[in-house]
Length: 93
Image (cartoon, rainbow, N blue to C red; front, top):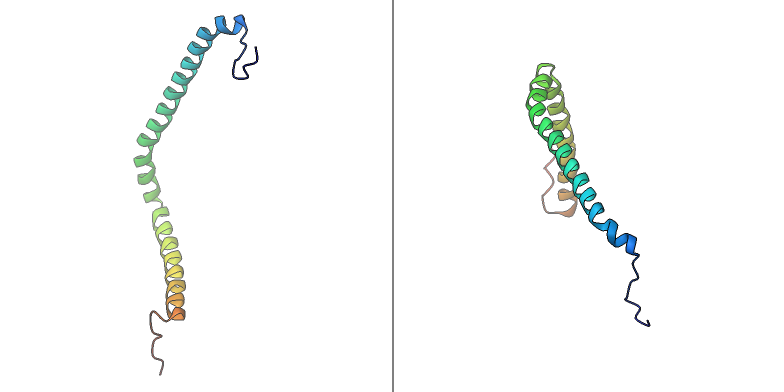
């Protein structure tokens, strides 16, 4: 009676447990099936989306933006390297 770790479960809970375990298993199985269909559809649609985007020049635009961002970060990197003295400043005439 003085054991704090002892749990008092209702008899109804013990009798309902086998049904809830089956229900939990069924819900997980349905979720697994739904996620599998979703990601399978993504894998099928992805190549077609690449072909579709390529036709409208969107990939070229993405490449130009990525190049601009890369150039910006390269400029910042060189500024930091020159400020720290690791790379000498270019000679100006």
